[in-house]
Each structure stands twice: as C-alpha cells, then as structure tokens.
Amino acid sequence: MNALKIAATGMAAQQMRVDVISNNIANMSTTAYQPRVAEFADLVYQQYQTPGSLTSQTGSVVPAGIQIGMGVRPTTVSMEIVQGALSETGGDLDIAVSGRGFFEIIQPDGSSAFTRDGKFYRDADGLMVNSDGLALADQITIPNDAQRVTISQDGEVVAYFNNVTNGQTIGNISLNVFANTKGLEALGSNLYRETEASGAPINGTAGTEGIGVMRQGYLEDSGVDVVEEISELIEAQRGYELNSKIITAADEMYSATTRIR
Amino acid sequence: MDNAIYTMLTRQSGLMREFSSVANNVANMATTGFKAENGVFSEYIAQIEAGSTVPGSATSLSMGRLGAHATDLSDGGLQMTGGELDMALSGEGFFQVRTPNGERLTRAGHFMLNQDRILVNPQGHTVLGTGGGEIAIPQEAGSIQVGRDGTISADGIELGRVGVFTADSITLRREGNNLWTAENIQNVEEPTIASGFLEQSNVNPVVEMARMIEVQRHYDAGQALLDIEDERIRSVARTLRQ
Image (cartoon, rainbow over all chains, first blue to last red; front, side):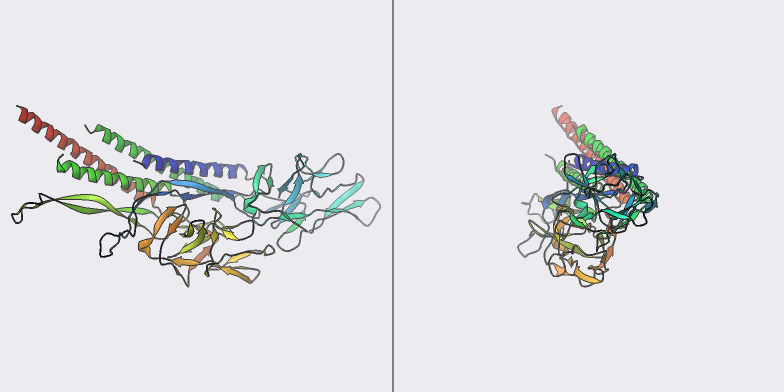
C-alpha cells in the first residue's frame, strides 16, 4: 500500500510551502526583497494498465487504464519578479531602482554579487559601500569636503562643494540585467550571484531600454503581499491536515488488515 | 480456497489502489495544473464449473475490480500571481514542451526565460509556439504582454504565440512532472489564456475526504466479511472433526 508514502510526500510539500511563506513574511520589511513561490509537480506513475493497450483482437483499447501516482515533489522555489513600492527616505545615498536592474557589489573574495538594495553609505575613505561595508563595483569615492551629492536617473553622481556653483561629476553608477532574473542564486544579505541559468550580467546605463531608472532618496520596499501570503498559509495548513488525515486512514486500514487471522 | 474469499480479496486490493489514488490527489492539492483522477470499478465475471451440461446450471462468480481510471479534466481555479509569463489555460487544451524524451503536454503554465531568453518551464523544457518552434524574447524588450490567445508581445511588437493543443483524450497518459503524453495532437485555433494567473489543482478536498471515508468503510466491511467467512470455515472444520 502506497498511500502512507504518498501522503508523506504531500505533507513534505505543504511543509515546504509553509517554510517559503514564513520566509516571505519574515522579509516583509526587507528592502527590495523578492517574494519566493514554491511550485510542485506530480511524481512518477505506476502503470498497472496502460491506456490505449489492446483489449481484443478487434482493436478495442483500454479507454483510461490504471495509473497510480506516487505523490508530489517540489520543482522550484522561484522568485516572483515584482517591483516593490518606493518609499521616500530622503537619504542622499539611498537609491531605488525602478525597473529590472541590479547594482554590482564587490564581495570580500573579489567576486561580484548583485543587489537591488540601494541603501549605501560612505566609508572612512569616502567610498560608496552597502550596509555590510562592501563596495559598489563602480568605485564611487565621495570627496570629504563635498557638501551634498546628487544621483541622476541615469546614475551620474555629482558632488557639490561650498562656494562653487557647478557640481563636479565624480562617477557613474551602472546597472546590470540578466537574461533570466529568476535564475540568480540568492546569497542572503540581499545579494545574488549569477549562475548558468541566469546568464552573464549585461552591464548598462540606467535609463536605457529594459534596465530601469534610479531614484535618489528612495528605497524599494519588499515585494511581499501579506494578504496573499496569509491566504496561502491557510491553504498550506489545511493541505497539511488533509494529508495527515490520509495517513490516519491508511493506518486504520493497515490495522484492519493485520486483524485478519 | 473458497470463492467468497477470492471475491473479497479482489475487492480489497481494488480499494487499496483506489485509496492510493485518493492519497495522490490529496498530495497534489497544490500542484499547478494537476487533474484529479478517479477510480472506476468494473464487474469481472468468472465462469466456474464450466463443464456443466445442464442448461442454466453453470455458475458464475462476479467480482468487482478496479477496471480503469477516469481523469477529471475540468478546469482548476485560477490563482493570481502577477507573473508576466504565468499563463493559465481555461477550457480544453494543453501547452506543449520539448523534453529530452520528446514532446509532452502540460497544463502547468508557470513559464520563465532561460539564459538565452527562450521561454521554458521550471524544468527547463522549451515551450513550443503554435508552429512548433521556440519563443525567444529579446533582451531589450520592455514589459511583456501575453494576449488571450497566447500572443506574446513587447512594446507592441509580436514576438511569438504560445501553442495550445488538444489530443485524443483516450490516449492521454500521465508521466509525472505535470507532463502528459498523447497521440493525435492538434492545434487549438482560439485558446483562452489568462496571463498573470496559474491554474490550480482541480482536486476538490471535500470530495476526496468523502471518497477516503467511503473507501475506508468499504474496506472495513470487506475485512468483517473475511472474518465471518474465516469463522464459518473454522466452524465447518470443527463440525466435521466431531
């Protein structure tokens, strides 16, 4: 009897759904968080009687056959690519991306990581870094005596000094897009890494076709829709209960079987 | 052994399979595009004492066995996801994907782009267009629109059309992984695709629970009958010994 194992795959799937939902809800205030969604597919089928097999010499066939499925398995937990709402912060190094682009960050080991979290600070040397102190790949250094900094929609960083009317361009922040954004590998800390599936990053200037523009003084909110998550949670919980009912019933049938003398 | 026991055994093993199928339906409650399956019991008549020459005296034995499965092909509910490449089919038809083992049908419209920006499903199988070719979305395309008939366009330029196909329902066979094989595949001219939605599993939990209880009770009843039959044989043996 397979019902026990089948129901166990169902419970594991619903459990995984709850895990994904709880992570989404935990990240409902994470800057530029992309909600994840678990997807499932049916497992293999045992073919007791193949549909379409002959039942007589005259050519009549089995119309539906007997195929018994072996349960369910998770296929993907993919990012839902949503544009989070922009909330105003007023910080002059806060940048929200409105569009598909990612900032490039240099990790301590020298490799690149990508993020949509545009909360930047300046470190002791004036270098623009993220909240973990990792530098932007574009290496923007803000002079110590700069009074204020503006970042245009296309990523041009201009510093203004005391008693000087015209600003001075100190660098450009570029954005990267991927052929398949869902293929990025999440590293935590709002960082992602390119993979075989995502394709290589395509570096470009903000404002060009398909990349998106930057908004200084804003941060992108988390893309999590709490109402949606809660209704998913209810569904997952009920699904879990139903699968456990099947296990109870299967157990009772088993015990009935063992009672035969 | 006695025929009554054989008859009950057939029934019990059929019920076990039926129960497996209930368990599979419930396990796939959250599987995109899953279609529930139901067991169909059929009568099997075995001729016993075939050699009898007296008319009307040939006894036969009727057994209920699980003869076939019927797939419930009705639409599942639509779940809004907002994903620009998520597609739900309403009404008949399937999407077609190219797998290493050949072309397969699927109702799960959770599509995405691969590293070459070609439309694929989560397993990486290419989604086929109406002409049987793949659909590529150029890098510079802005927001992607999917029309009701499956036409994919970006910035007003048509990029391809997702194919929707029907097949001979008799030859439909489940393969797992949301995939089906079938023969006699034909294009659907006017499909209805809801973009930004996914088709949920069409398993109805209430129906499945009712089926579960029914199967369980029938199984218990069968078991009780076996017990009684066992008791009867014992008492026969006891009586004969005396």
